[in-house]
Image 1: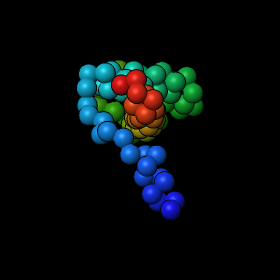
Image 2 (image 1 turned 90 degrees about the horizontal axis):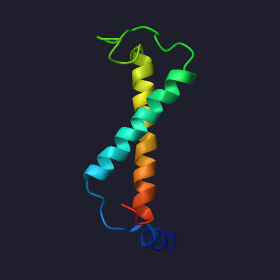
Image 3 (image 1 turned 90 degrees about the vertical axis):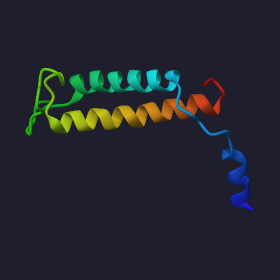
Image 4 (image 1 turned 135 degrees about the vertical axis):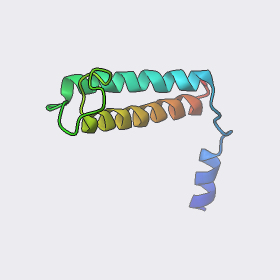
Length: 87
């Protein structure tokens, strides 16, 4: 009973990639990097990235943390907008 009700609620058309999806993910990652720049206590912690200026002075842990946060945020926004029919 519960499984069929859950499948009925979550069954939607598959989401395909589009430029809109890419732009949303890009904006989410930029937001996450800006948020991380102001909130990470030690953004240049070792090991360093190959070109620290390209990564905003972030060390490898901060780059991984902000991009992971950006992808989680972007996926949530994309799935949310898709579920309400905006994209």
